[in-house]
Length: 372
Image (cartoon, rainbow, N blue to C red):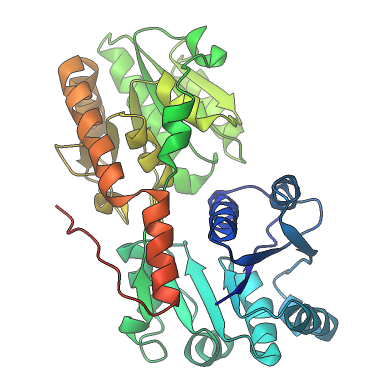
């Protein structure tokens, strides 16, 4: 394995794009020749150019795998760059890019699956997963379960390797300056934080309901929700309905997630599913206690009653009760936060996870400490 291509043509910036950039830079540090196949002018392309990565511009839509001209471009690209390993994370990319890689004779074709939703048992997916992909990596046990849910006859469970996402702790430790003005100028009481796209999947509507319950108990708090998305208008209406203008603040997009996590006291996540709750790990890296629903991959990250609380879905009354207990107990917040940080150091460090991934692709043994 010498010439590695990270293939991601998604036009917005999200967790998959962040992972591709981090992995590409780390592989470059490890003396691999790295190329980045991405959409022209995408955030990933801009960040890749800024990091002096080799960029190949291409876009893959849902039907791009039917476009012979894109196959021709990709096959020529793979052969020109002598690509021996190509890595994907989105379904439209993997269909076009993986079949092209197979035609070009690429030896290692990898799918990093981060979506905890079932894969359709279609003819093309059966061919792809059984005969084209050489390595399948899930970012959680929950994601692995959903991969196999409809494809058990096409994919051997042993072919799906679980490797968690990692986090660069130096980012959190090297710039601790909790000066996020939007938070510090508008805070009152204990500060609660949530970060994620404003979508139905992220369930911020539950947070508004929980905030209403806390207000009814005369608890002093401020809830900051970082993110943009199609649910903003609906959330604003809920805030208006419960008269929570002073307690709930929609921050919009926050680029400096590290300082956001340092600026809050408790991180809360009400997603109805997560492939891998990366923001939970970010909060734990900043020594913050976490609360989330006991669904999908959340219990693989949060140790209940040690780093935070896992709540039965969709019990907002239980959720608000656990939030109240953390709001009223600073010592408990500190204890959970310290244990959370220790958990990240043990299981979710970026270099360790990339080493595990690298060893998996090279068919080399890797020793992982047992989960407690």
